[in-house]
Length: 136
Image (cartoon, rainbow, N blue to C red; front, side):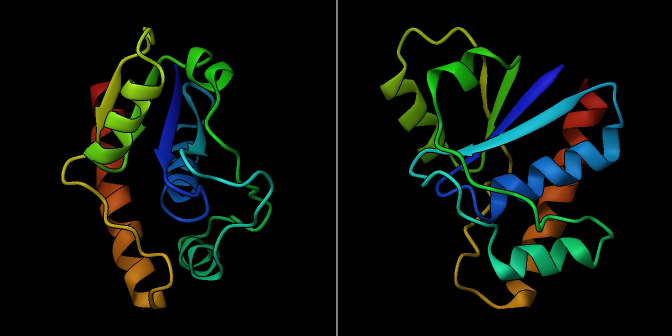
C-alpha cells in the first residue's frame, strides 16, 4: 500500500510522518509526502531533521514537493495533518477517487518553533503512524 502524507509546506510534519512510517513498515507499505503550498526542493526544517535524528531517522536528504494530481492518483490513501488540508484537496481535486483521511488529533504546525515543539510533533506523528499501521 502506498500512503501520502500532506501538510502545508512539506518541510516539517508530512516529511516527519513519511520518515516515521517508512522506518516502521519496512517494505510492506510505503509512504511519500507533499505540501498543498510547498515549494519544490526545499530542505526539511532544521528542527525536523534534529527531532528525527534523535529517533535514529535521517531526514537530511528530504526535499519538499508540491501536491500534484499524479501524486494523489499514485497512492492508495492520503493522510492530512488537519481538516483544512483535506478540505483544500477536496476543493482542488473534486473528482479524486483516493480516500482522504485526517490525522486525529490534528497535528499542529511546529514551523518556526523550538526543538521541543518538534519533539512533541514527532511524538504525535509517531502515535498517528502506529495507528495507521495497525489498521492496514
